[in-house]
Length: 220
Ligand SMILES: [Zn+2]
Image (cartoon, rainbow, N blue to C red; front, top):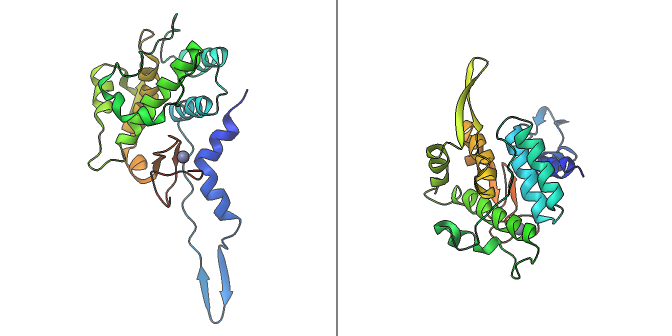
């Protein structure tokens, strides 16, 4: 099942909705008025697109065991970021010190299915990390943790240096997904500072240059 249309909505809903109603220019009276349209957001990197697809897939409960396996193959193994893991693992919630920041993104009743339980714990931890970037001062310790652990690396691409994900196949799933975000964030901190929105209530992650509130989504 393709999740690209949903992802496009996450990134571009704002510019699409405004482009229908705002005129580029209008002639009235003696002068020419020009409406300034918001800059369209750049297309997501492959790493960001993969990470957002994961979060949306879990939130909408479309991601199951088979979908998770093919998401890993498509976005991590075939892209050369990591070897295919023989087992997916994620510690029980509460086992990681940072878990207290993420508990609001867990369902009230944990899923009984093992894969579903792993997926919701993973999403809660990843969203909790991103939420730290919106705090003042920002809590970005997960960035240095990923660098220190070697889950992201700087490599030469053409004539530039780029951060790429390099998770290990035995890493826990939340560290694997987080490494996709970290490689993207390290390459463009300013973009995240200006556009990242994380809903405090449902954990939805989106990018919007002019949100009413960065910690609320359209639905909460
Ligand atoms: Zn929300």
